[in-house]
Length: 535
Figure 1 (spheres, one colour):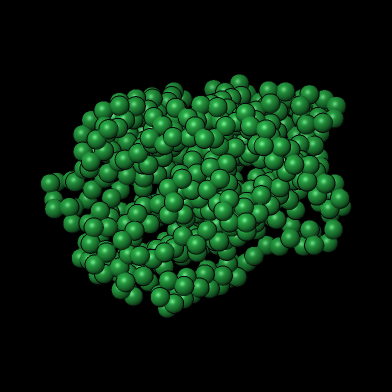
Figure 2 (cartoon, helix red, strand yellow):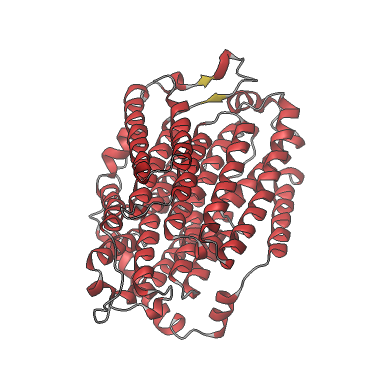
């Protein structure tokens, strides 16, 4: 098991190469063999090292830790690894077709998995940059894979804006190397308290966090995400929203751990960045008519909720944000995959043109309803748990509590609007769904229900976090949820449904690449003032 970390990177990359080079119809089954092998390795590795994570550090070639290439695993990285394996399992099943196999698509999909697993395990800043850049390139190719004009434009927009973020991140890495003479995350973390007040260290933090903000789609640098989601295949949208964006949040956790001794006091700043992200995301979401755009902007909004948790120095709040990463990955992947099935059947992406989905596709409808209940925070579903943890931890602040409640109302409004697709007479379609679509949807839906009801043993067993104070059978919880639904319905019926001019203006707003870069620069300036000049 000593080479577990390396094997998790090599297996999917080697599989991708074999799939691309070996031209045979049966080669697609190799993806499932590789996926099974990695899953077994991950389970065995977790069972062996879960109580002694210090022994999981690997330094290649027995080099000194300061200069060697190293990989490390702990509870956080392993939880992300399990999420990655599960998500790719479901996407591979969803895209599986017994009649034909697109080897090129599978090549990029498996290659992306290997690179992303490398990002989760790397222990030095330069390789973090390398894996981040490779992820950006591979995602760009997958966004453009349909080879339409819209997909090419969205892919170019994505790679240019994300390349700007990655470049800024690299400049921050260079500054850190100049100060500490190493790029090892652990070594820097141990030494940073001695020079934490240095202007160069603070500015490096600003640059690295600005790059991470782009990858995470935080306000105000999120404009690439709805563009990419709107044109990508539904399976890629599920990976983008459910997993790839989470890579930026994972880096946010790691970089903040590294800078923990620098006394930056970044919690309040990033809480309100998260709050702005959540509010702006939900405002854009409620104005949309395209089902994929509704889901895309709710990815922005839910990431804002995650950031409201992760930014806190309080562990309970932080854990609420961390848990919401996994919950959001599950229910949003479910919703995107379900939306893909419906779009194929109805040949439209507009909610107003979809009716009678429940009678036409009852199984898909049930799975979609599970996703909707989860994202709106219904008790007995996974979204309720993480949102409640954050809610309890910020209840001392009236402003923060009302922000979270307002976002929940906006989320309810959007999905009340979307729920119209289930009503109406049965509609006969030329193409419904393959059994593999149903299996993938069922897997994500089952995970949402499991995490929504067995959260106590799961949290205690994996993270050692006790959540018995969260009760799904709580009158106040049901009351708050139905109040949010009622207010959401009123907002939809009297405001959103009328489609007033301000709503149309929000929906039609499409920032250009130039304006997006200007906003990014201004974001760096604001962060520089807050973290470098004011102290």
